[in-house]
Structures are given as C-alpha cells and as structure tokens.
Image 1 (tube, helix red, strand yellow):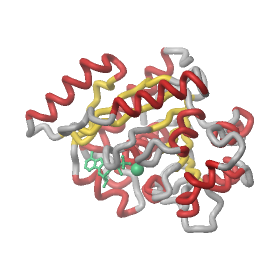
Image 2 (cartoon, helix red, strand yellow; image 1 turned 90 degrees about the vertical axis):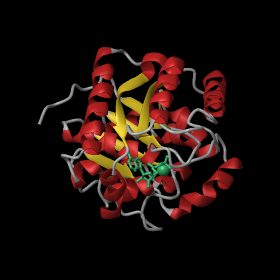
Image 3 (cartoon, protein in one colour; image 1 turned 30 degrees about the vertical axis):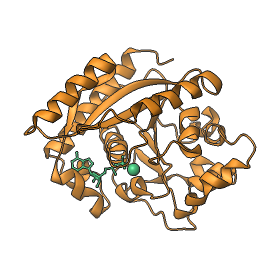
Image 4 (spheres, rainbow, N blue to C red; image 1 turned 180 degrees about the vertical axis):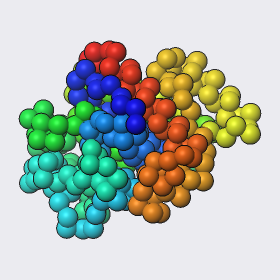
Amino acid sequence: QNQLPRPVRRRVMTIANQKGGVGKTTSAVNLAAALAMQGLKVLVVDLDPQGNASTALGVDHRSGVPSIYEVLLGEVSVADAAAVSEQSPNLYCVPATIDLAGSEIELVSMAARESRLKEALTPEALDELQPDYVFVDCPPSLGLLTVNALVAAEEVLIPIQCEYYALEGLGQLLNNIELVQAHLNPNLRVSTILLTMYDGRTKLADQVGVEVRQHFGDTVLSTVIPRSVKVSEAPGFGQTVLAYDPGSRGAMSYVDAAREIAEYGARKETS
Ligand code: ADP
Ligand code: MG
C-alpha cells in the first residue's frame, strides 16, 4: 500500500450541500476509508440523524449508544463516543442515532447553539484520538446542525452531482458559508469541490463539469467520481466501496480523490 503524506496540521473538513442525494455521505465515508487505508488516521463525525455514514462504516448507531447527540449536549467526549470502524484500525466514527432528529429544535434554546460541535472538537479533545483528518457529514439542510459543522471546520468540501440543476441551490449554501465566515468562523473556506455520480454516457455530465470548473477553478478536484452500482451497493453490506470491491472504478476514483486531497494538504498550510 502506498502511504499518503500527512497534512501539515490536522484538517477538519465539513462535507456540505443542502441538497439530499448528491453524495455527501458516500464521499465522506469513502474518502475517509481511502485515507485510512493509506496510513492516515481519520475520524468521521456523523451529523445526520439518518446515520448513513455510521451504517456505511459498520458502526452501531442504535438509539442509546453514545453518539454525536450526547457530544453536542456536552455529556460525552468525542473520544468516548467514537467507535473504531471494522474496516480499518485507523478509521473512527462518532455515530448519529435517531436521537439527533430532535436536536435541530432542541439546539435553538441552548447556549452557544452554533458552536456546540466546535466546543466538542477542541484540539485537546481530538488529541485523544490523534486524527489527521476529521470529516463531518452534514444532513441535507442548512439548519443548526450544518451551521455547527461549518463553525467547527476550516474547510468545506462540497460534493456536486453531475446532473441538471447541479448548481441550483448552491448559491444558498455559499451565502450561508459567507455568513458563518463573517460572524462565527473567519477561518472557514471552501477548499474542495468533488464532482460525483458522473455518467460518461451523457453530454450533460460533461457540461456540468465544465460549468463547475469555470465557476470554482482549481478547488475542483481533477478526479471525478463515476456513477457505479458497486458504490451504491456497498452501504447495504455495512461497508465502504473500498472494502466491498476495492478494484472497482468507484473505489479507485475515491482513492484518487483522497490522494489529491492529501497531496494538497501536505503542500499548503491550511489557514
Ligand atoms: P447524501 O449524503 O448527499 O444525501 P448519499 O451519499 O447518501 O447522498 O448518496 C445518495 C444515494 O446515491 C445513495 O443511495 C448512494 O448509495 C448513491 N450514490 C452515491 N454516490 C454514488 C455513485 N458514485 N454511484 C452510484 N450511486 C451513488
Ligand atoms: Mg447523507
């Protein structure tokens, strides 16, 4: 196995796009698995009450297990809520249980409601696990959970599905990111755009790619994730596609994307 370079310093990346089904969770878990497989330590924070990232990493997320919900309440530390994934000893996940479903509303009345996750992901708290990367998988909304994720991170990774309407709604996300930058987290920036579910048989997919690259320049990774049945089958087995079918095009594309992210991180001071 080729080892990837470690980042200059720990990178906390929020995977956000308020559209559902664009590949946030798939990208979070498969990039995490690809980095972990190549020697880096990765923590996935599942911030979606659906718990899809927890499922794909084979981590228990039945109601009652220590989860991101208790972490946001300040009852449990990230290290205590994190479970190691069966897929790699380098890969951890703080699961999301259904208990998180009420939290968008519960958070409203809490003190420091936008920075509960940031408070939980302090350098000291993370030092217990020593992750090189933290990926926060957001729910498909721009509510308080996503705001918490944007406040806790320095980088945003936006997956964009190669589809008609791909750019629609993105303005709203970018606006929210600017608001968070202005008021809560000046260090935040969109560092990475990943084109997902590319279907080479359609002209449309290419057009979307060209348009996204015109708009976002070199924040768009060269690697594009193809639409692949293996990628969509893997979560049904509690696995990432890297575990499910490592030789598949889907798996290899996530390995390539992870390498781009790691090489960028080793080159640049991310601040
Ligand atoms: P989000 O987290 O943004 O809602 P998901 O990652 O859950 O999106 O992806 C939505 C659906 O599309 C899932 O069923 C997933 O398995 C499937 N999917 C994601 N990426 C691919 C891909 N590259 N090829 C085929 N299916 C994919
Ligand atoms: Mg998801």
